[in-house]
Every structure is written in C-alpha cells, then in structure tokens.
Length: 268
Image (cartoon, rainbow, N blue to C red; front, side):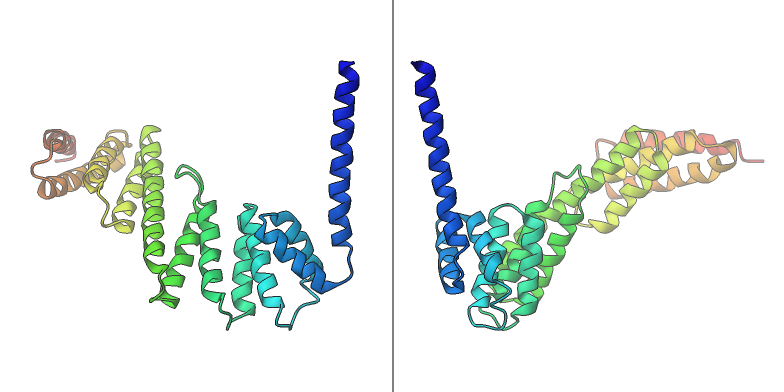
C-alpha cells in the first residue's frame, strides 16, 4: 500500500513536470518574435531568468537594428547577472554600451559591467585580477559620469577593494617572511608603502621591513653581509625617526646594534 502510494506521487510529479516542460516548449517553439519577446519580458519580471534568456536568445539576432533590440539586449545581459554568470554579464553589459551608445540604459549598463567584476572579486588570499578589473571599471564610470548618483557607491566599492588588495599584499609579504624568504618579503613590504601610501598599517609594515632586512643580513653569505647590515642600520634609523614613541623602538635599536657589530668584522 505504501509503495503504491509513493509510486503514485512520483508518477504525478513526473507528469506535472512533463506538462510544465511541454508548456514552455510550446512557447519556445512559437515562430512569432513579438510573442517570444513579450513572453521573455514576462518571465524576466517573474524572476524566471533562465527561461527569459532562452527566449531572448531565439530573437536577439533577428532584432538587430530595430527599436525593440535595445531593451531585449539590456535585459538579456541582466539574465546572466541574475543567474550569477558574472563573467558573461560583464561582457554583455560592456557590449551593450558599445552597441547602444545613445541608450538611456547606457549609464546603468556601464556600472553593471564593473559591478559584475566586483561580484567576482574573491577572498583577499586568492588571485585578485577581477578585483583590479572592478576598480578600473568603477574608476572609468566615475570619470565618464562624474555627476551620477552612483559615484559615491563607486568610491565606496573602490575603497573596499583597494583594502582587499592591500590585505593581499600584506598576506604575501608575511608569507615570504614566515617561509624565511626575507629578500622577497622586504621587496613586497617596500612596494606596499609605495602602492598604499595612506595605509593604516605603515608602522607594522616598516617594522617588518627592518626585521626582514636584519634576518636577510644575518643569513647572507659573507660577501653580501656588509652591504645588508648597512641597510639594516639605515632602515632601523628611518623607523626610529618616524615612530619615536613606538613600543617596537627597543627591538629596532637592538637590530641596529647587532648590525653595527656585524659590520665591525669588515673594518681593517
């Protein structure tokens, strides 16, 4: 009895799914482009983005050069965005801008092209090419539409993503430090000060620079030690000048003292 009941439910579900599928197939195979366009807009408004996309794809090429093509293409780009196909969404929004340069949707499409890349921006530990593309896209938007109401949001998102890039660089520098690749760590931290001059972590970064320089000198071959100990003294003195009240001063002074002791063996 139970098995028959379950079988009846499954059979009913299969029949129902088949009916729904055949209903959409009837719409999809209708030869009237106007009918497909109207149904595509209806599915879009209902949040049935996959179905809307399927119908738009059937008519979009045939609408080229017509007044109807613009809105169809714009919503077609959005169907990708709403399905989280952000690479394609960015591509189609950007292509929309290039194709419909005088469209009332142009500003929104340009913003959404950048925002789609923002959606792809991953955790700071991962590769950040989409983050960089989003920053470039938002900056282009600001330059193109300086009076747009979206400009404050663009600036906010740029700041957010630049912070992510900064976190990425610090993570890489610390990884080099932790794996005793002190020369690479020093290079990354010094580049951070150039790339992010307003960073709130400048003291921490300069502290890592001095530590990395010292450990590099300590572990260097004899021929390179003199120059590298001199660099420790230079970086250490720069730190003391910049942060005279830092709790790290004593540690930095010890690095300088050890570096100066290391340099004495090179004096004749």
